[in-house]
Image 1 (cartoon, one colour):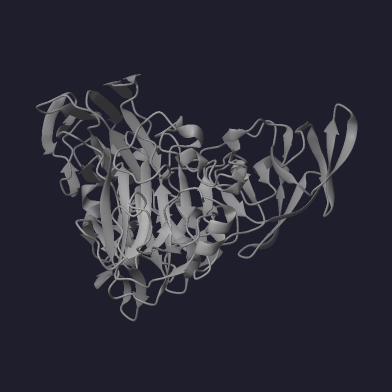
Image 2 (tube, rainbow, N blue to C red):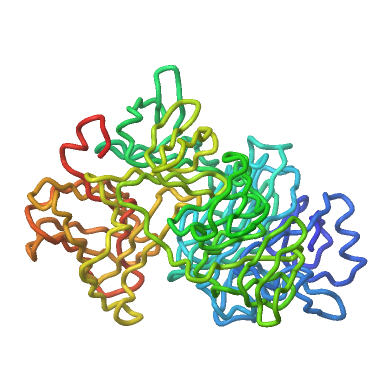
Length: 574
């Protein structure tokens, strides 16, 4: 990769644009003139390579195999004349683009790029940035001592604009640059160029450090609280606000990369549970598992949906492969039914007979006929930091969370391992689990394109679920019988889409009669929605254009749910 370099006065004017003496180039993404020039620049800086995750930056780095003048091209996908779009204002011939390999699927890829560690030796980190305006979704972050201290996002433009982080209070500390692309909608990409440590940021947009206030999220009764969730001598608190643990309807604790836990494999069950665990053995239809929380357990293979023999990517799921086939890392898949599993190998009843296969290099196996069984709507859900998911009845406590599970011994979960809790029951219905009764959408991509359902439970976003609606969309849901007498509240966090260009009108109606209307302008502040629903059997969410037809445009409802009005006042969650 490009090593860090000290810019001196004798550089040619073409490459010194925007740079002054004593600036330190962290990365300009240009190919070296020669191996010797690259080595000379690296002498006074820490060594290391950029690392890449996901598909947005696929093709970067030495593994791409592309060559220029006989040398590996580290930044091949980032050549300024490569891809379907053209950026404006970049310096040189190359830059960092989250456009996917060869820039074909510009908005449709996700990924992460992370620089090697370096020492902060100037007052500012300046860079050029373009792409989508998704705070936390398409952004450049500065991780100081492995914690996020700065974040910048673009403004829905392909013109590179100068941005600078004010590092004046961080001199001498160690930092890394993180480039994230978590969005696949309109403007779901970003481009970065000319990362420079400098004392003279020029006309760049100066950003201050992020104020750390905590980003844990709690719905408690009728309140939506955001801050640091912790136990004190006075009980459970969000920031300085005490809350009754029995009133918690949902909670989501932000993890960060350093807090994530991992394990050697995982098992998906038909009831929706997921255990991060080690798969020990199987004999006569009995599967033996071991995890740090559950210890060693034996379960019936008939209750299992899929086996994952190695830690899986976050996006992996049982629906991404075919049943009755054993998938392997670098060898062909093998069809058959599992006969037994041992420490060193397993056996398949294949068309070639009983076939022993070494466990080294195994990926996953979906059990034939193991269709999923949706969990009861009356069961609470607990997600752990390692990705495990359990269902039962939750009791929150300062040292541990007790999960009472039907027909089994209660499960004791350390509080520090809990990532999220979703309480359900007769008096709370989450829209993500409620099947719509009608959906009518005529977006720019055709019928049915105006509704996007986002599941953030395994991520680090500020909500567990999000429902995105674009104009010319009407989405209807049945009102549960216990709520139809006018006792229900529709609650959510309502905001314009991060990439909206024009205002949208959001409406709510019951039995065809509109009773709520709100205009959401681009960039307007989110608001808590808490609407008493009139008596009826069905309610409808609608989104329309306001004054002008312009895409992208729309609204986002975070953690939308129905709750009985009286349950938002008392201490007991329903």
